Image (cartoon, rainbow, N blue to C red):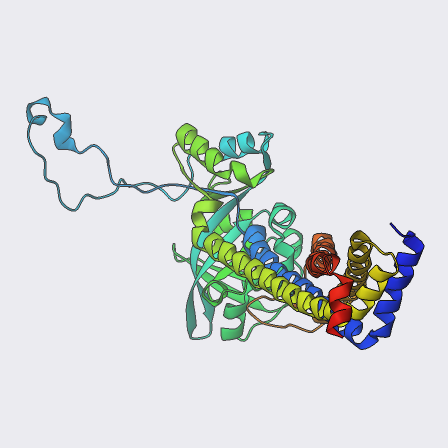
Length: 420
């Protein structure tokens, strides 16, 4: 084998002598890798955004009082009718209160569980919002604000005012954006609510809450937990829901089953509650990878064609090199080095292009009422995309150079010279 320095010199000479073709090959790599990075960064960023909107606001386990039909009917309790066929229509569910039985001990047990990151109680009130002659159906949720902000990013959905107003003033309310718009109310105003027991309460608007779901924002508001219990006219142990966030979301299903078995309540896990969303997220991710891999494959074929043509144009040089003592392995090494240089340069340019365009997209304003917490388009700067892009560029160009070089290795210089 000839000296490696000489082989490198010949490879560089080939690349610079056909600078236009070399540049086109490098640009092919650059656009292929750059497009892959942009596509993956944007699509996975969008998926993470949508997943975050659900996971941040949805508890891993929701606990509430179940209302089910009676499993055992009175007729089945009489032994003389056990062998008969029972046909019962219009089975009525057992009459149960909305509140969770022994909610405070249950809440304490959950907070002491090492699997649980936190648990927050809620008390739900059905009310009418009063403003002059306007009476709107509504729901007010009593919450522990600090825990809601810690566990479910509650503060991010306050578009006006301050969530801590619920702590500072007992009769403060975070009014739903839809309610505020319909009643022409803003922060600092007052709103009257009529409870189901016929008592009217005056609440100070400390903030405007917007979830991004119109059907929620048109009816739902938040007050302090004790204020909600006062509106209902119940004691401090009246809790209608408990929201649980676990340290490991994969424990949601077994945890919900354990809670149901131990406490005779309904426990809904996040996977069951968001089954359709999870399916959509998986499909979007699959499409993203399918499109991105297709882009890389198309770029690979383009690189192969360019390098293949480059080798055929160098047939005279190959004949001369072999006639002057270069072996077939030397010829292969020359063209593989050329391919790897093109791949490395194109890969670096592709990474720069992908990152640059991603930064531009990340700074484009994106304002929508449906997602009030987002200001710009989502981008995922996962380093794996960039390493994958450069790695593919090198592997792809190596194969694109190796296959034609393998053919060039077997070329007989006498045949080339005779053909001339």
